[in-house]
Length: 411
Image (cartoon, rainbow, N blue to C red; front, side, top):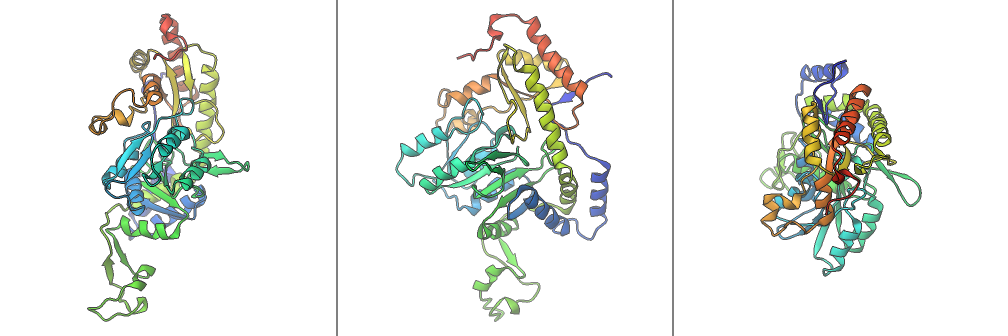
């Protein structure tokens, strides 16, 4: 078998998926139809939350969450720098301010001690919320973050875009699945093609708060409320003389607030419903791939750190940290292995530098970035393809015997 063009991530569309989309295309609704509700209900059941709201993409999910939590200009929110920029941009969309805390160098997750340090050094009320990210698919211990957030009256948006099906084990020994709503006010997911569930584009917000859920429904669709929405009970339609909901004509609607068109289509939702049926199969395969990587690299002196075998990890990414990362990346591409880097620290992006951030502000995040590389990780990765990736990396370090390839972080 000739091996070539191995990406870091790849979607998997089956004949069942295709037929589900065709069925949606032949239906009476291409948008705002029954597939959306089915996808939301099925996803909530899969995650273990009370409510789920489908939206156009993960960024829209983050933005709507910030809006529903009433983020206003000047509000300060704590976020991690090791994530896609949308995790912090959602606060900026609302005029809020992002304050970055450092990561735990072993887990790559937002370090709760770094967050606590920020909170303790400021008067209570300085910060409004926290946005932890299940980076690479490793679940944040939200039980610990919830205790800290409650102490300072903060909300939590969990960015779980990498982690549907992931979980952590709480203090009682129970599995807490990412997005189940037990600790975060909102959790957000993405259905980008390289994610666990691929809809082309798409996102989901989960919550256990009924009031926030209804707020999301309005914000998702222009801020408009209609039909039997209980919110209409507080409104008297003076020009028509309608006193209560039962008197409203079927066409009646009201724009209660400034909202957005962040709706998902029935076409995408039909694909999501189909993909969700085999989500656990894909998740288990990702964990098998992760175990093989871990076993191959655990005793190698050129490995500084790796994602490893972690209970509850969803493995959107499998990350290794190495020295001479740049040349390894080039070498892999030369051999048609298209590894990726996740991520350039957000605080060092030109936009966030304009707020005063600079190199040296978050040393663990910056040190991680110097060494990280994401290896091919997707359920349809063949065994021989994975072995080719492993042997190619081994070959690079075997041929490059300089001392700086040993297992030391370059400070």
